[in-house]
Image (cartoon, rainbow, N blue to C red; front, side):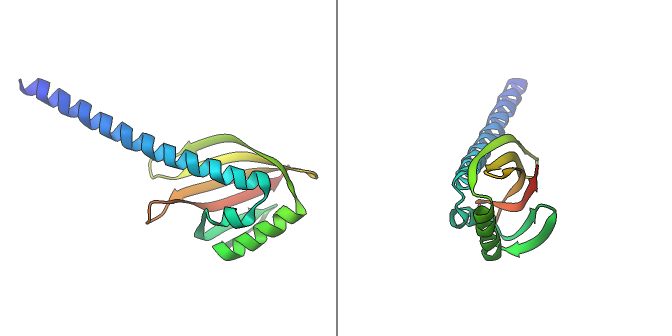
Length: 137
């Protein structure tokens, strides 16, 4: 009788862990989709909603840490210089520590930029962009 009980307990635990991971992935997927929308339309104000308090921002090799307000202003200038014609998510992954990353392609009239973003869950449970990298192709 005890081996059967142990088996059911293990199955229940496995289901709980799977459900939690699936819920986390759903939230991250929704966040990534919202971020992608802001990139497609070049909306720095909406994009800034997804910035962590401090964001590592790298544009064409120039990397620096900025407050979310500063990063919003820099992205606004970026969108003016390179008005978007599209954004495509190419790959998404995650780590056991709860970090998610996205690789994508930002298209504009002058060409494309490869995009890398690192997204992490912060104290309030929301997912925020911690690192944002735009590299001209």
